[in-house]
Image (cartoon, rainbow over all chains, first blue to last red; front, side, top):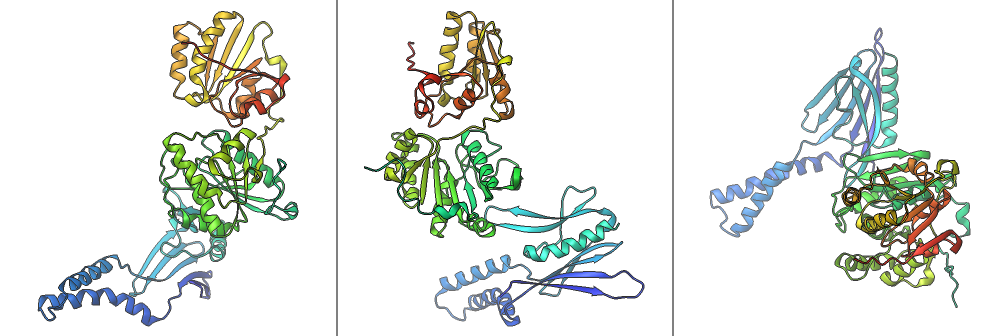
Length: 172
Length: 343
């Protein structure tokens, strides 16, 4: 089963230029599995705490402490799962980068078209992996702005988005 | 009686000339580091690209140079950021490099993995993992190594493991083949000998650049112990004392350069010995054509490309008789001296 799926939406509003939204959606197994893996550390912390605090089950105390510490560890490491990431291309205005999390929170970043110099696809090499990323070169900043921060879509998904960005930037 | 050609050319069969291969060259030693192995990998890659195959090079990151770079004719180089260890090698973590190697092998669609240089830890790991995954593997050994010191003993053991399951092995000279076969326990029939070559179009003679009234001796090498820089320090004042019309041109840089400068000061040879410093490879030909004789004083050499470059430029070569040097030319092109220094 594919990890990511790609969706391209167009908004038709009369009088305005068409705004294209390129979404990359993370395919999760089922909502139930996601909910369970989210609540597991919480359960692992609460159960031993209750039994230790109120001495409800005075058996295998070492094991209960271990479960408690594991639960805390998992709780700390747990990050908000990403549901989808989107790039909204508004011709003549700019580009908006959105990240939607499982909890419902949405993080948006707008980059005005005047600031963008170019959109590039480049390869990143880390000590353990190698992947393609899509980034925007901006004026007055040496850092690249990544289009997809959390999600790593494959090259065949990045190319149409890059083309759309290039068109929008080229027609400044 | 077995011939010098290996009897089973298994993997790279007759169909190889028609089939396009995608080769991964792995070594710790590649540009911007400069040396014989690096040049060999680069020129071999260029020749393979010209024949229509695809070549990717994998090496470790050099300082800030990290990521993917493209060189001439679309040669793709991966500079992988792994921890450096000793003498340009990556830290040998047996399974640490497995994820990135597998990633590169799959995303580039590699068919043959070619490792270079026995002393490269990245090479050994890549060959091991490639073989585990069932890829075809070739290994080239470029240098001679000892048997007695600690580093060599460990490396030879690792080499035995790696070469136990390699499809083909290549050495750059017959001396190097003997050395590799003894260190790794391979049957000698399985090892190819393919000497290095120079690009003669780049190294052309130019007799008008040489002075006619004096004899100029050119030395271009890394000024390290292994390349006999100490021998140079002893030999240069002697020659200058014995022959008054001889000048030296010393190119190259290294830890022993200080000793050469000291020798120059001590014997007041500033006019007779010219120190050029590090010479970029593109300018080597222009330095070589200024001389009549090329001096190579290395203490060990599997196959000396510098001598070939000098001969291609029309110089007479004088070298220490070590390693693969005696195999390089017929007698009339070279003179070898057995040098014993009397202290």
